[in-house]
Amino acid sequence: MCGIAGVFQQPANQIVNKMVSRISHRGPDGQGVVDISNGTFGHTRLAILDVEGGQQPMEFKETSIVFNGEIYNYRELKRRYLPNLRAKSHSDTEVLMHLYRKFGPKCVVFLDGMFAFGIHHKGEMLLARDPIGIKPLYYGTDAQGKYFFFASEIKALVGHVESIKEFPAGYWFHSRLGWHKYYRLEETIHPFLGTERDALPAIKSTLRKAVHKRLLADVPVGVSLSGGLDSSIVTALAREDAEHLHSFAVGVEGSADLAAARQMSKYLDTIHHEYMYATREMVAALPDVLYYLESFDPALVRSAIPNYFLAKLASEHVKVMLTGEGADEIYAGYDYLARFETSEDLQNEMLYITNALHNTNLQRADRMSMAFGLEARVPFLDVQSISLAMGIPADWKLHHSRTPKALLRQSFAKDLPREIVNRPKEKFSAGAGSSQLINQWAEAEISDHEFSSERQRLKKEWDYELQNKETLYYYRMMSEFYDDEWILPLMGKSRSL
Image (cartoon, rainbow, N blue to C red):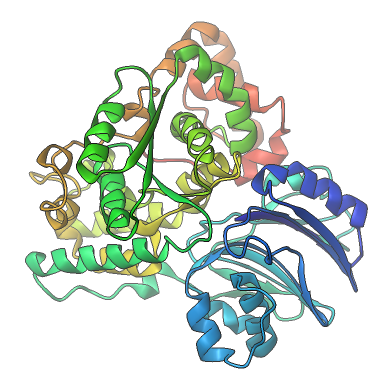
């Protein structure tokens, strides 16, 4: 996992060095900036594969690459398509570079993983982002529209471009061929033809494969273990392949997550670590959380706070952490989904929130982990896992008289303690004990008049609906780092506050 930055159409070494310095937290293991024939590429590295030999930017003859992410099937791709390649490293980056040299932009469809990358080859450039948007990418041009800039985070582009746009998930862009959408979630869905009973082993098998491939690393790997259903499933599956598995949990004193995580750790025999934080620590951490998060969406900030402490704790022991992100979207876990009465409406909502993950929960997961040079991997959002889950009849996910995520619970009923299988859904911010504390603080700090005035202004200037005083509290703090035009046009809005 890393941070990437670059300029196309003109070498700009000094500018790219500044861009890389702003995202240096993403890669504490090394930095590199190189001029190419008509541009500059920059990279800051978190070494996961081939710690010694995977430095970037990587070059071969007239080809250069900067890459952020992991390609889990890179060894298979090398065997199948590049059998005669005499690689200088055993990194996925080098395989990707040579796949492009052989196949051009269409090589993107071969990739199984999470990624955002730039490749320069013979004066032309390719940018690409993974199907769901697990890894971030942004771009923009200068005021004259002559030079093209890209970077992993918004903060790297501020001041260098006229406006910032998010590179869309599931797309590639080629400087000569233009834009191409190579992945549409809706087109990957194939109706599941068996019974509910048939679905259970399919769910388990698919998730086992997704977790197994995400243990790929030349450095220590751990798991986020809140004691909820999703993280417990990931931990149980990872434990099958990992003899010494580190698990991590955070929360305020007495939080439900800490107790449940201890129970799961004991049950699975993990090497468990936990951290308890106080209200004053949450408030003190908020400026950092908002600076790295690049969003003041209240649901996102609430969950980012425990994620921040979790990443800080985990980064002291491992470089890679598996999480349970995505389960609530594809298995209808959120409480608000209970209001959907028909399978069609529920399916449409699940598709919407899954397609929106790139600038909601996935943005939070990426920014909080990378703030501490930690790579977060999300097995529930493996493309095969998404395809299976979305192909299962939505009738089986309707809440009505059923427990949310009943299919997941049944699939792993024999692998987890009964209390965990039956534990009600709690958002991470609730289970960790942080969901209401900042809201109470904001209510005391901001007057009704201030809230009304700012609500009207933001609606008029940006068509943004300020939800409550808590949101205004976050917005004001974020405004110390970013002007409105850098954040508001790009900001996602969580539906599950």
